Image (tube, rainbow over the protein chains, first blue to last red):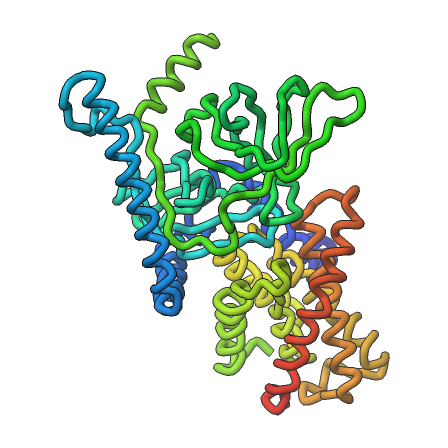
Length: 275
Length: 168
């Protein structure tokens, strides 16, 4: 025992190094899974508030531009609303859109922290469970898809960005029923890669890529980006498509969290069918 | 040896705030953010017990990681940096550096910059290794280190020179 103690004291810096590294690695491993401790991310209340303070003290400089963006956004939304009301009125008389009939709820939120330089990028939003933001909800901006909510605290939540090596989103070529998986190779923050589109599909550079209907998180048809390059590997029957993102991921401010009210129902049904 | 002077605590908090709220927001050429946390190791007196330095480095790395969503990348690279610090000191200042008695030690500008460069090199290499976490991507790790290192070095050297009077 005495010898062991002497040994420990002799090698104390190595022992401490191993202990600290093991702690750090354990944190890294648990954090990359879904069950990561909420206080160990920027969505915890103190850091959320600090980031929010920093954002609010710098955002005045871009107010004019943001106002313009919001106006454009509002105009587009109104147009879509009128169109939807018109179509609905045509279908079944003049019924108002009510909560139970619209499957998607929209919660506006502000980005208080964002990163694009890491292999696994996250955003922090200023809305949390108290405002109805929960994990696995979709996050979009007026330009297109942003990511998926990973964790929610009371007033803040963290979002897995499209620019995350584990992010994978069901995507389709607009106007067709070909769909594949959109992932990020960690290189350019304005490009993602779309795989699993069969080579029978007719693709042109500039074609729009939108969210596919296979996702229970995103509504189908939300813009992701445009085809900027495509190729078919040797002996492969699938395209590898380079997608230029419609969002400027490095400059996000106002986003919308989308709650698919029918998600639970759909997932339950699908899991029952799989059993 | 275990005293935590107000200056040391202030530096600890200042480095955290500067990294998270200023340098994490900078994206030079769209992809380069300087990392300045190694200044903590640079400013720690050379006779400070290695265990205290390692725990301090780990704590600073971890809170920065929490605030920047970088898991424990800074914590790992700073802790290893703290562990290797005596060797890096010897490498930069020569084996005559006596880090048991002389806390007021300061070398020539060239030696200081070399010391800073070694600290940064180890921090960046480890940071990107842990971030990418695949030895098969060694080329990517080296490229990222080579791209980030000059910018971090420029900033860190500037800060070190500007605040050098406080080091004594």
